[in-house]
Length: 169
Image (cartoon, rainbow, N blue to C red; front, side, top):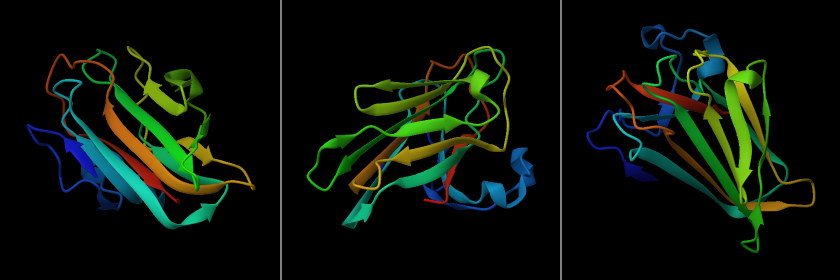
C-alpha cells in the first residue's frame, strides 16, 4: 500500500468497510468491500493498493467499484487508475463496464492502464455499483493488480471525506 494523503483524512484506508448511512450512502451489502479514502484538498493526494498473488490467479479476474463521483461545482472529482501484470510481468490492460451512470464518467486507457474519472460539473453521487472491472481472459494468469485512487483536479475546497469501495475480487 502506498499513501500520499497528508494532511490525512485517511481512516485506516485501505480497510474492510460495511455500509454506513452516516456517510450519506446506505446501499446495503452493495457497499461492503475494500475502502480507499483520501483527502482531496488537492490532486497530489492518493492511496494506491497493489495486490500480488503468490500463485498467479487464473483469468479473468474481476471486481466492482462503487461511488466514483464528483460534485457539481468542481470542488472534487474521483479518479481511479487500474493496471495489472501476468505471470511473466507483461502488462494486461483491464477492461471496464460502467453501469447506468456511464454518461457521468470518462472510461479510457492510458497505455496499459484503465482510467475511470467522474466528469466535472456533473452531479452523480451514487452509492450503487458504478464500474465492473475485468482483467485478462481465460488464458491469462494474473500476478498483480494495482489500483490508485486520487483526485482528478485540484479541489477548490476541502471537501468531506471522499472514498470508493472495491468489492467481490
